Image (cartoon, rainbow, N blue to C red; front, side, top):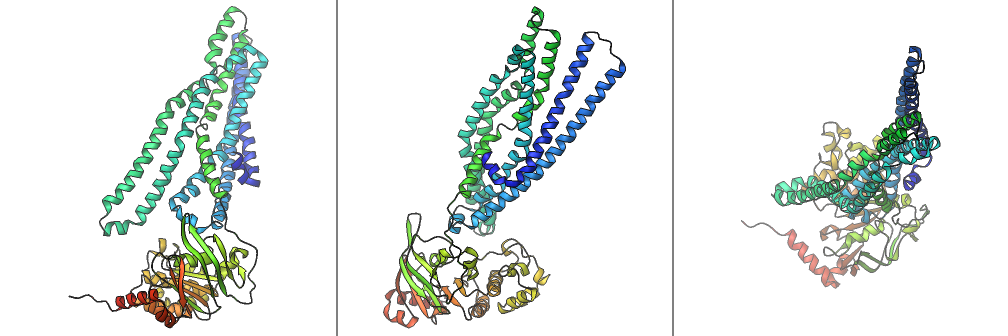
Length: 575
């Protein structure tokens, strides 16, 4: 709870106000038992009671119950308003924290992993904020106050009123311990299920095309079965203990009635004290039951909060405050090394890229080409060495300044389920509609956009599902043109394009590259023969570098790659 409150900040004021309202509500719910006790004693002692007196007592009880309902409703309204405001702030902080961590580490854990944290783990905090603090605490405090009153009336009846506590506390401790032991497997199975569901639905098209429904469904089915198994195992282990707790613990008369009756018959306890104690014992049953309903949540809340803390306390990318006021935008990699866990991907790499030059990075698959540019956009922190732009280490820039200098276009850029206009405007949020349209024209996108049902206001679906691969790529290039960053990274931007779209995409890229520093990762060597510098990367190291003519004359590796590329261009199907 202390961890949750840490993220609540000033919004806790409304939760505390809700706590006061519910505390008042629970207290109002106890007072009718005092009135009923008074009426009952008067009846037993045959005191002269008028109908007016009885009606007055009944009216007072009704008013108290109405006030109890009203204050409880107001308390819950306030607690939920405060809770969801706090959850909103937590999700914003969580998203902000993710944006400051290494993107590679985030993507490695999978969409389902963070979906669970964003939606379910943070959502669980609503129980603490909207219910445990404003509801559970009053429903424990008021019965405690009632027990104290009973002690003040007769200490023997006070101890007897606490007789149900050992019978309820022991199974509760057992239940919480079992929940704590079983929770890691339960949460692991839940996270696996989330990832598998997302993967299964996202890959449905490929699964059907290649007839892999059986094997893919088997993985999904196994994870569903695991989740069912661990959920049922946890519930089965706890339900008996939960039944004992909810039935026995609130039953304060379990000892006060039989023992109190015996003491009354023996003459050591007065009738009015006996009845008074029984009435108060019955009054605390409902509050205690409500409080106990929240007990099983504590292990889950603790586990969920610890899971969130892993991200909230996770290592952030190293950033500074430099705003990027540069004389030039030369790029330099100096003795850069980087590893994915224990696998070395980039090993002691050094090279430089002059401002407004075109540099291509080529080489066999798995050699580290994409990692080189991802390090430049601060996808990860380097393990050794440094990368600089304009003579300043990229770790000295603030994140916005660095990102404003770079446009990154890959083979799988993401499009949002929004209009084409807003997807392009993402490159420059303050851009006018006219600027967006001009960028689309430069990216050879305007014609196909205008043919769509709502033109630039067409909603393109999840991931741009209403567009073809080539159309999506031209939208992302339009976005990059609008951004107008001085450094352009093209990571296999035409890899999946057909011949017609490739020409259009290449035309758009040529406009994007004008007066820019451009880094191209390419498998098709013909597209980079005019590059100012070609860096040949193999096994995470620079095997050679120079222009096309130099490498073709001096690098055996480049010569072999060129020959393979030429053969692929000249390949045709024999029939």
